[in-house]
Image (cartoon, rainbow, N blue to C red; front, side, top):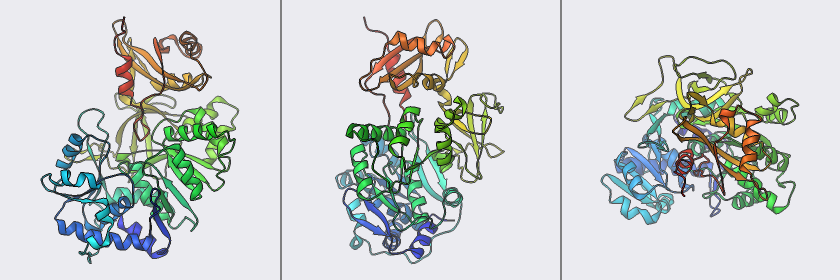
Length: 506
């Protein structure tokens, strides 16, 4: 197995079909052009003596080219977060040398001076005349070879480098994507960062299906809507915060319909989707099939999906139990197993909260320098908290270590957030535990009001108390203009916890 197989099959099946277009410049690659360019760059990479190909730039044509050229050259692809500080970037670079670095022109001189780093600008990398070492040898087919090293966000401690081998990535694609399933007119709009597993998965799945990819380097709702209409986008993936911004932008236009009949499918994932957002989106995009995808870096992307028909059934359901499935992440993909376990590692019953464990061929669960954390039976502990209902639908409830321990009682932030989001004045909410002399931890919440609405703290506390036990009522509620999210839609709960946990000022 090798990631290059996917591009080889696509270029053989439809060589002249558009493969990638940079939405900011309009410049494109056909599938044959991408294949030929990967061969040429693979030679350059091998000639440099590098053991890793590092990409430090926004999403552009150099992104898919880097992924496939590194696979052909037989070195891992390492996309780095360009939003990190210079010191953080240099620290990560030092961990992956000797490296062939592709970055924006302004960073070449400084980062190229780093020991064992051969730096080239993205423009130079894309220029055929700068490469004269076209590789003739076929790529390696050892499934155990490392395809991608992807640094985790490093919310605590230094980032870990997740190891994704060719067998993991190719297994995911073969098990979830139909080869050549896209029509010549199909186009995908990709706006997730290139250093995120969803960005890598979008490249591979689009190539294997033969779909044209339009890249949006820097997301804004306005730019997304403009490109979606301009290129008649048929499918896209967004994180929940992006979809919320798109909905807000369309509502500001005063339209009741997004006027995108060509958008046949819209997938979302990477965070918890508020019920109000997905309900509005389904109204604004009446011709669109929605899917919720849940996955992790260590699982080579998606492991669980709530599909279009399940969205429609849940939205039309008459019972709260069935309707609640609209905020679930669905059920496991074929070949993937999921269990929920308690703190002692025992599987819990349906409806009970615990840590999510996953098993399957696409699951890596390995970190460079640390080895595998998969247990003897093949299960990977995700560190995500969740629950399964009696029909196997998975509900996410944050990170396993986000649990609030109040007076010895374990409380789920997600359960409280779900209730608060049903209040007519609440647009967004984050519930965390803050230090308490009396309880050890107290429940606190940061809330965002809907446009034109006002939130009365005491009334909101009563609202929660009427629906949950009193121990789950936030003792502290602050109204914020917005909640802190990172660029991939993850709530920065540690930031909320820090701000809410500050002593009150007299």
